[in-house]
Image 1 (cartoon, protein in one colour):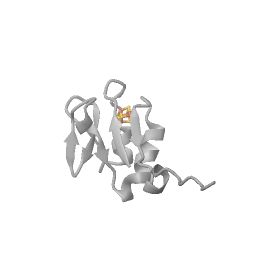
Image 2: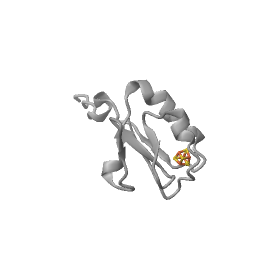
Image 3: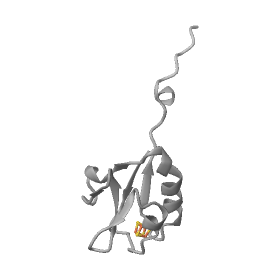
Length: 92
Ligand code: SF4
């Protein structure tokens, strides 16, 4: 699972940091960013601002996204390989 924040919508209230400080940080500008390995990914809107979420943080990140007043925390979930592979067509 990966997560990113649309900084244009962030209110800077810090709820996400309260929910999961491993993944969310607030920088000097008062806006929240995602972090990976303790490093803030502060490239708003860029692909570099998509952080992997460790299994132990998944529930907290989901709760943060649900509670976010700016509705600006976006979660991307990879589909299992079995769902991506086209099903075999039955022989006639
Ligand atoms: S909870 Fe949402 S609006 Fe609040 S600081 Fe975090 S990303 Fe920004």
